[in-house]
Image 1 (cartoon, rainbow, N blue to C red):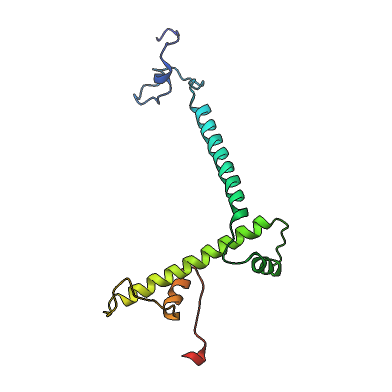
Image 2 (cartoon, rainbow, N blue to C red):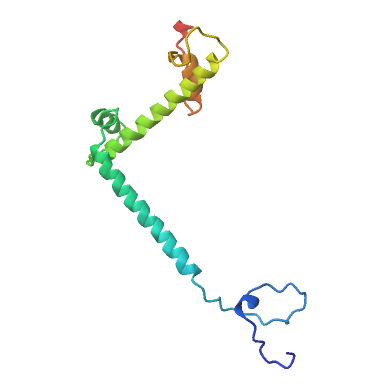
Length: 157
């Protein structure tokens, strides 16, 4: 090996770093090993993009048939007031759906606060018949989780 002949070592050994401390014991290679990992990774990412595109197209077709709780006219009014103008009704409907989810999440969080606050109180009604009332006491912490500050007006205090 010291006479300058090249050592024939398999690719799996050549790519390992030299940890023996002896320099020159293995020849340095600059050629990568031939494998399918690069093409497999590219095709896997390409498949994900195709699936995402297909699911987005499916979502948009389902959006045409769905009527959100917040009417499209109300959403379009507030979007125009904010300076957003869209000719595609699916965009307006998608924003209506996002606003509906936002309001629903806040109401659900307020309900959880109400249940936690009322869990220490005993009631004569069973758990199934219990009715809850949305109060500012429950709504304020739920809104603060989303960065919204809500205060009672001074004349209600």
